[in-house]
Amino acid sequence: MGGSARNPGVLQRDDSPRQSPYQRLSQRMLDISGDRGVLKDVIREGAGELVTPDASVLVKYSGYLEHMDKPFDSNCFRKTPRLMKLGEDITLWGMELGLLSMRRGELARFLFKPTYAYGTLGCPPLIPPNTTVLFEIELLDFLDSAESDKFCALSAEQQSQFPLQKVLKVAATEREFGNYLFRQNRFYDAKVRYKRALLLLHRRTAAPEEQHLVETAKLLVFLNLSFTYLRLERPAMALRYGEQALIIDQKNAKALFRCGQACLLMTEYQKARDFLVRAQREQPFNHDINNELKKLARNRQLVSHASVTVTADHDPVTLASRPCGDTGVFTALLSYEPDDHWCLAEMEISQLITSKRSCLEFSIIMRGGQSAFRKDLLGADCVHDLLGRGAEFLQSKATALS
Image 1: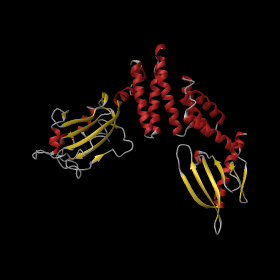
Image 2 (image 1 turned 90 degrees about the horizontal axis):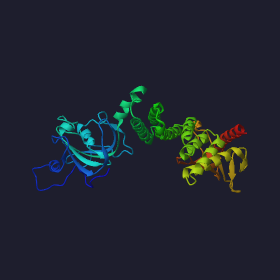
Image 3 (image 1 turned 180 degrees about the horizontal axis):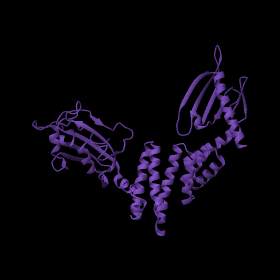
Image 4 (image 1 turned 90 degrees about the vertical axis):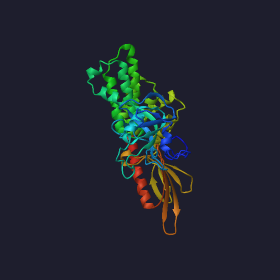
């Protein structure tokens, strides 16, 4: 987290030995509680509206005791801080008051007197009784969940009495929640939020001159749902929502791309190609679209060459492959179903001669978003069993498509 270079919990001494470091610091801080129980010093200004009561906040924080070098509590070491709801997840009264005084992007330092922190008893063994604590807090973002939750609890008839802008605002908030959950890899929870937003938009009947606002909001949610179902490994649903997006905007490159990805996962190669080519027509230089077309070409080539026979040192292996000269080395492409815990892999296989027996050394480079490397020495029988299973799978794909 940003802030001052030195540890805020240990302040430099001056010529006032009767005052503690926190007492000296408090003299230049703003009283935001009215009784000097919560004092604030802004390190970096924020922008936009103040945090609303009952909002859900995304913050980084570190708490310090006076004269201590390290924080007694901090979430700054987490890669992705979790969303916390005011009044529920935040237990320090002083922190809640402090957050209500902040704007997005703001970084501030607070002093909390015992009444607004850990009370007269403290929190043994970390926090002594009657202790003033210092917190540095950075407000990354916040969402006004209270307004959204109250609105979603209303009946459809009650919701229809509100102006369209209110419905669009609540739907946007639900979508923002979904986006946050998606970034946390909580895809199921994200899907629930996106569907809440979609339900609000489906219920609303707008005037003709305002219908385009509803359609624009729906388009964004359809795209989110399509991507989420891809991550949930449910390509049929991803295709469904991608096609719903295309009804609104038939040239939307993201929707075409999601549909192409879904069809590729379902091994519907011709449909995948049609969608991806249309997406490429809209965005010719899009790296993701072009890579997906290359992946599609490889998959189709696998199926069309599923019965090629390659001989490596007298041992025939039936496999889709590309021979690499007469060195006994060849490259083979395997494609297995996700349900079988396989993925597209490129295998480089070479023959090694040892003093006792023949072994095969191979490396696997995982494709499709994640990278991994594996290098083993295995007996020929074990490796050939693996390759044989791959050949059977490829042959079954070729038969299904013929």
